[in-house]
Amino acid sequence: MKVIEILSLAITTGYLPDPWIHLLDEQELWKEGELSKVGHKVYNIYSKARTLIYITSEIAEFILSIPSRFGTTMT
Image 1 (cartoon, rainbow, N blue to C red):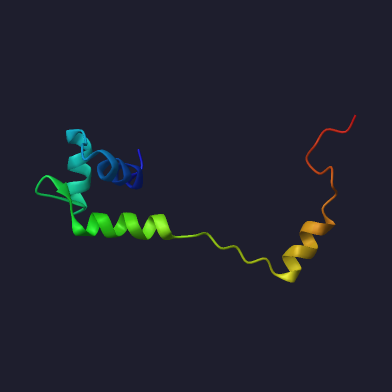
Image 2: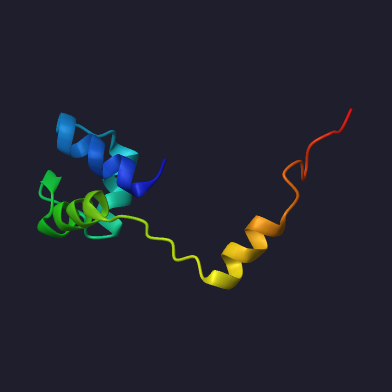
């Protein structure tokens, strides 16, 4: 399970199994029986992050030059 999923579970339920608590504790994301300030900040940053993809004109031209049936079986 990914750390971010564990953080989400901790926030939504307040409960984590001991192995997951140990994992978060090792990374200073868990402190004194609850999610640490760092754990909350990591989760907040992750949840607000957005993927942004830039496509240059060269990449766009390449994509447009690919045959429309590329990678499919022609019958």
